[in-house]
Image (cartoon, rainbow, N blue to C red):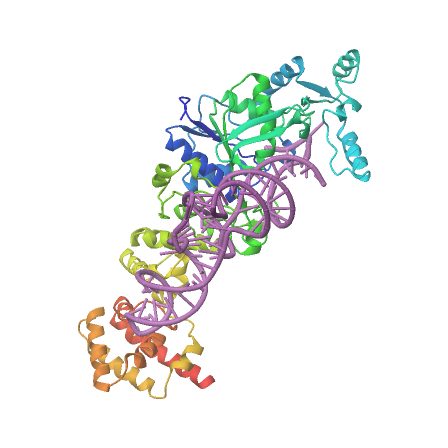
Length: 509
RNA sequence: GGCCCAUUCGUCUAGUGGUUAGGACGCAAGGUUUUCAUCCUUGUAACAGGAGUUCGAUUCUCCUAUGGGCUGCCA
């Protein structure tokens, strides 16, 4: 590593909620920073005033916090390189653009957006799919390179709208090193004269990004692969200003699990999984669901994301955040895009849910809804249900009969498993239960097995019916544990109620 | 269309100029379990194609194909 202190940034634009691809980019930045005792900061890139979405910035900060990705500098956090919102830095960009003009590395352009649209349309009808404002075409446009200097001054004085464009040199190979991809070479003939400064007085992403990364002393630019094509422009800007280039690392994209294409906003709820860390409700009231609200634990979400495009080189898959920091390296980030796998995400969630203590899980359940049970009882339920749940709410739904008497009975299983003599066995078992003085799982089991042995019955002949009568369903934790948890009185009551329900169902058939 | 990036089981991936190409998810089978889940065992399934370099290429080079990204006064 170089001797330059590591400072990395995550630079989202507040145009909507942050999707999981963005979270992963933030995560890799964060891991890299902490691994190298560096600084991770957030910068809000809101130079496009037309796409600003109220609430998006707060969403981003909240979502990152839920994920445990904690910036040490950023909006609302302070830091010595602020402000950390580009619109609040507005005044500092123009002088840089003007400096480039003075050095003949950029120029004023007076063509209106409509003029440019026309040029593009015209080119398209002539069979050229992408017209560009570049070293060839700029000679035919209205700019400070084609207009007489006096006219340019006049236009500027008159307040004519203008943009400032990069004057891209011809036929130069731009080489830069990417920590993930190695050397990348692009010829400037394929690059256009990008707008650096817009007519609304704001810089474009390209200018603001370079100025801010430089003035914020960013050492490594770790961002999505969608920025790779504009990286040569950025390299040229650093060069034009005479600044040292930071290191670059362009991350592979997150792809949709089905078909192809980059994971996007609408995929999630269409395909049945969230693409956002937390719920987002649009101004129109449309809901995009989030991992948090679906019941995912942040650790599981982050763990899954970390392994999507990076691997530790070992077979370890479950990582705490601390372990991720320890193990992370950009060299082990893969080059190709990764299809997101909702199934594996559930597997991570299951692992994390099970690893939680009963007490923690109990708290989570109480956060979901009001539960009229003692902590001891609730934790008992958690212990019983944890192994068969993926989400906390599964305990509530799959184990509903532990919170109260069953309201529904699985008619199909009852019809399949219930024999004419079954009711009599259950009655006999009930009187045995009634006679028990100690009601622990162990004693219940012993009594039950003794009863079966006397009757010369297989365990399945009575135990499943017993389960159905008590819980209404055919699957769940051990029946003796359930019996102990419910207690003798409740078991006796449910035996009566359940038996009646079963009779009803059998009569219907 | 142009430019750039990529390509190992269905998916995430490991890996090497000579390996029975490894792991995980999923799926399937078996075992454990009264049931379900868990757990254990086993199985399933991959180096995109074609040239070249080489004694030998999945690994190196080139071409093709495929996928992805970019191509805005969006970021």
